[in-house]
Length: 143
Image (tube, rainbow, N blue to C red; front, top):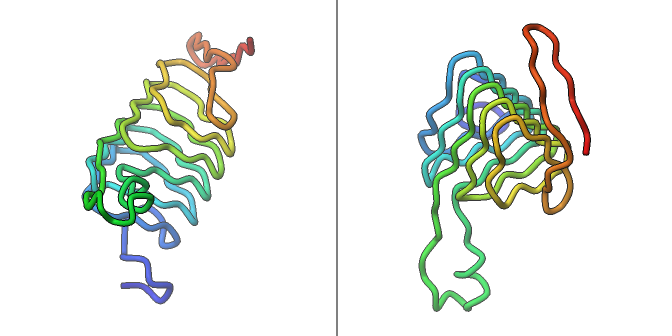
């Protein structure tokens, strides 16, 4: 355990990783992130998770609003493809699949699947464009 209370991890001393997520080679995780692998989490290769982002694979909402009569913590896996960019303070909710080469805008709340090569932003996140790759050239085409 480090001085700040987060369990040690090899990605960033200022992020909190719980559970046992599978994280691909070359992935970068910024400071002050929460990576919840308790419900099953796969993050692909070469992903950038910007500072303050949160990835959840569980929810206690039903348990809470039922006065604990619903006594289960809901869990569903999250899958993030290769070469995905997750912007600062974005939140990805349980059960979501994000396709490869997608861009998640800063502050977005992702509550549904995101197609590969999509750009999403907003609360809730919606598609606002497409990523186009041509060798080393990258173009963001906005709708």
